[in-house]
Length: 280
Length: 165
Picture (cartoon, rainbow over the protein chains, first blue to last red):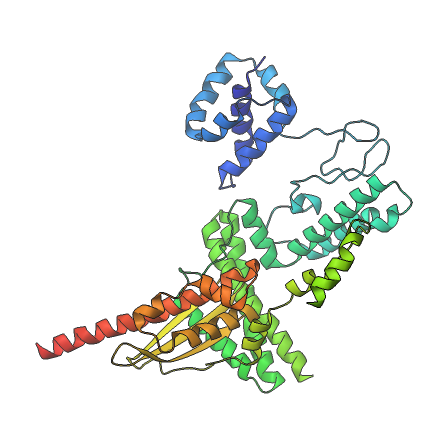
């Protein structure tokens, strides 16, 4: 019987081989640990020591030792990296993740708490996204999950339907726009934008933003406003490509800075729309 | 007044109805009247000549919400702030915070202006927690303007020293 410590080490090593582009190892290690806990048992006495000893270099040495002392068949048996849940109604195991409905009894399941939006919308975790495909998936999901379909069902199912529908809405809105999509991708890696002032912001850049905003404020004709709108769109397109490249390379801090720039320009784009509507 | 009376009458009903919203909650999700006042009647909007050696310019941005704020101060020869102007592109709370900041710095010395805290601004405008970063932005703008003024004064002094030697 493999010890709990050994199991954690094994799961981490195998998982990290598959997902080498993820920069923040800590969050990822945490996910595999959680899976291991679910696989094995409910009691987890050494959890705290594990979280404080997350030194993956030291683990590397341990991995070599374990592979040589334990037979290969027992290693493969335990490490799946997937959480196995059962249907609350018929108790059959749920095969798919995310599992919206049970395969056997077709009853709606509760939404997974930490399911990634990308997984829900069946998209790859990339910055470039096919918005048509996203929209199709959104409509397909809402057709089956919307609370209107559950008005005659028990309260428990109605509540699950409401939660699912709300979650799908949130996932769709987040992934639809490049800015929110990029920020969500950073969030998945544990990188958050700070609420405070941007002390690292280039004053030249801020000056430029000021000038664009002032010009927009003073625009007296729709043509003037449109010109600013077109310039902003161009800048956003350049930023989108740069963010895509940064995220593919795993350069999270660079992506964060670029997304901050995108936020400023996105605000200007909103103001252009407001200005044009004033002219109408 | 009316809201507390309404609340007293309606609070027993709160136990019965599941979805009940008290009147006082509704007022809390709007902008405070002080913020609306600063938004509709902003004080000190404009620009000062940033090339002047008596003018300090602070330019700050908040990446989370995309607000941009410029605050300028004009300081006399005795180190007292005689004029202040601002230009902010952002939400109502950001505009109100910077408007209030320009009101407060006027008449203060450079050292006194450094003491202005974002908590004072937030308290004065009754900003909700979600808008506290706007008052932080205003405090940073004041500090940036003062720092810029100090830098210009230092450069000026260095030039004077070089000229005399």
